[in-house]
Image (cartoon, rainbow, N blue to C red):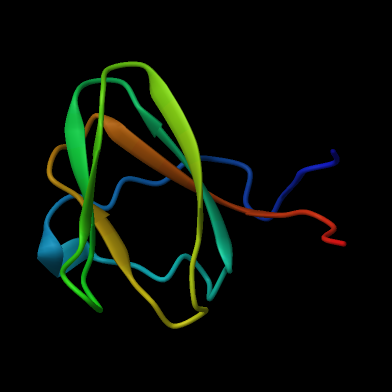
Length: 82
């Protein structure tokens, strides 16, 4: 699988006031350096990540995400589907 970084550095989005759609990206690579919750401010749903865990979140372009602590980094990505 080929993954294309849409930005070169991971961003922090700590707290609901810092929620971001990450440039309207549909896929976001999330790395937790410490245990943390990732929240979608659109629905209020959350995902708990353990320390040193990474996932890809597929979302609507306008949907925003944020983390509960500054140990989590978000990087918008794109990859071919199909």
